[in-house]
Image 1: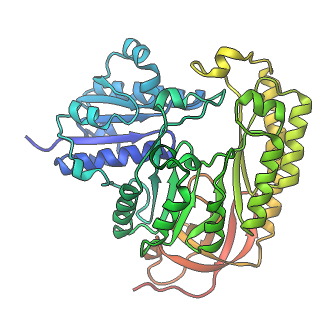
Image 2: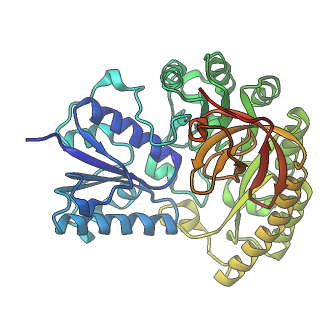
Image 3: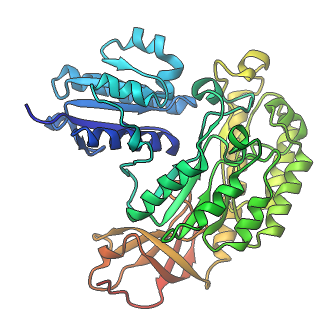
Length: 445
């Protein structure tokens, strides 16, 4: 018999992607053949399909259910022999899924790595704890610094899905980071449900700053980027490290969710509007040039027109470089679903969402236009031979969620520039992307 061929499909956030990459590392060591995620199953290229699901919001849940249905259809047609489902949707709705879609061979919880390996008949190898098989481009990787969350935000089901906050020890993270850098990674993106909570369970103090200091010392690592920071009790030593180190990108992903005291209280965010404003001002003053990415929720219970207008004024005043938004949806199993009335009509939620995003579009456009004429360091992510364009990012853009820098490629082997840095002058901008000219012809050896 030949080697078992496995396709791993990852849905949802980058934290799921890290889970899949740890799994694939174990499977490859066991001799399994890993089929590309985008391979067509109808070609008979895989024996086992693994679907790592998302169960956070309605759209993500629907996408995950659709992927499962397509998987069991492929099994019914004989394209694959086995379908295994894990991740957040499986953890949250396992009894319902088993009843509604019994054709799946096994359902497992979120990041049940040992359970997944057992289902596949593979022995867990503890020596591979820090091993990864990257499914991102080879020059950047996500580093998940903790699992779970101790916060009790009204709208969020993650604590009930992923469990309490558990930090990964600094030594383990440094070892994993060193392996990634040895493999060619130049940018690490630190992620968790809440990166600012890091270390409290292990070291009885917030230890994100200490972790950053250790990662900065890794030779060959160029950029470190922070995601998913929480505003309450923010560890301010992180700002000092960001301001003083060229390796730590002057970029912060910090979901603020709202500015109104009444709404923040209903959200159980443990922070006031005044504290939120003070933190943003502190970030701007202590880290000059910082790019702030945030998300907001509109239509949360208790948000009237006055509270929404407060949010608009807040966004207009503080002019976030990047901002996304969601309309509130009542999620079963959350504190909000049990204790709050979803009292904002759907059409009002949508109208508020559109007003907020229209405001942000103008802010983003002016910010991008302000960069025209500047020279910036750009990390090349990809090359399109058809268009002759490099696509890259500066330290102010994170992959997958932010805009991109588009550069007309040059040199004899333009595809070899992927994963390398270039200096480029910004020449044009829209609300999402930038266009740039490279400062000199590049001919990699």
